[in-house]
Image (cartoon, rainbow, N blue to C red; front, side):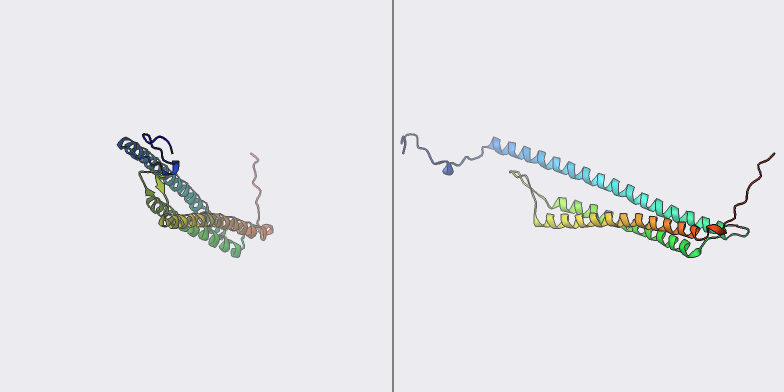
Length: 193
């Protein structure tokens, strides 16, 4: 069994108790991990908000600008003395499509808020410990994170649908001109001095 003056224990029975210095080092390491995680999460949220804001502004600008341009064109085409004829059915359909694109962009804004808010709430559910592993997920964290991911996926789908609404509107406008292309009279201008 060995020397009775220096007893040894099997490896599985050896317990090393942390010293005060080890606990202080562990706490310092835990604080560094917690701070790094918080900085990463803050940076991620800021980036996600900036990307969502830029995308939503684009969706609003594309569809809203198209609707305004279409209204202006319809006003010009319907004025007295206009030689432009346009099929009103596809034109109205295009306006409705652009309006749907604006509505979808508005829904994207709401979902963007829910995505970021739920993601931040999920971050707060991560347990922070002073011993490794320093960060531990909980079932609350996972549930909120899953909801945030669902909001993010819906956000992408609604954004894509907003762009589809724009393309559909453009195709409707093009169709209204093609149907009446033979009715548009183009007057040659005389450029002789």
